[in-house]
Length: 565
Image (spheres, rainbow, N blue to C red):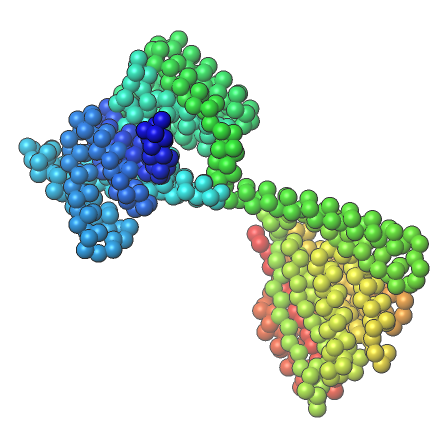
């Protein structure tokens, strides 16, 4: 009993990573039917780079010795001797191990590749192949580590993983029982497992592993059957038993096509291993193998669902407040909660590929003569599929006027940018300015939203001067007579909608600009030219107005439409 307990404790103490490294090194060290010897030394080198000290090395040595791959055995042994010497003198970096692998190959070559020029070229090709295998095995190790941590596997690591699967199949082709090889069983298992968790990646795995088997003497018909089985299983969804059934049918079909009974045995072993895998492993592998874009899309859908659930709760609360309000404040709060709920419900992913336009914006501003701070405020917000521009002129000038205009611009911009309807957002700002504003202050508000998909522009004005559209030298004036925001309830804004096209310029200005230029406003705008830099256009317009005297705060915003085609 005591001896048995010691054995069990020794087995438990074995590092799983080193044990897995030993098994992989053993299979790769066998070299396959074509004696691809560099796979053994390369597995030892990749294991060293990944922090595995003895498992891959001992596995490669054991595999090479068992199947008499003396070249691979000598190369691996020399590599390890060089590693021990190097590690005793300095702390090696990852790239140092590849250098030591090359040195080991160069020391091995004179003993095995000196009989002819052809042998020398073969040795050089084998040495070059060992570097390719090292990169692939190292990437495969990174992929497995990232998968165990639940991280997404990159495309480069995925490529290394598939090439390593091909190497395992090639090396495993040396070991066969009853005609069924370890390589064929590994190919069937890997492809069936990927069908269950990674979809179309299984087709790539079938092609890579099948090609490795063909290079080591396998039948081409088996490769075609594996690819067809993977395609069919992927089309029917990631169902474990369906995928396994397809691979068993594939083995039977290959047998009747004259590929021998080995294919049935290989398919059966692969399916059995797939069925014995814990279900959680397949699910975890599927999450790690998901492309980053698809994973982000799934997270986005989950967030959208949670946002809409929160919107339903807000809507219920707003209904309670609006149904039987005890005061004006409760009615106002209920209405604002309902507006936010509607905005949250309308949240959706923006189809960026359908956006036909964009808009570049520029602005310029200066205070009135004798004042240090302008009472105007402006903001530009991205709406995902469009742009929002707001310009506000506070009553008077100076800090108090700026505070009032900044409050109007900031709150209106925040509400409209999250999806609250223009009228609801402006009504909220209007009520808050009336309730919270001091000294009976008010502000004008000039807003425009531009849709990148359709080119539609919506203008909303509350006490603001005219907006001008410059198109191919022609100027169109959008005029409105309304009260500023923060004076009376309810608000009655002027609204206008029109379609813009490439090169159109939208000019929005406060009355400091329009009053200074007067009737010359149109001619000055026409002289700016269509499709220019909006920042330079805004500066030119401001300089023209300043030339008439700074009797009031002056601010101007210019937006130029650009085509995405």
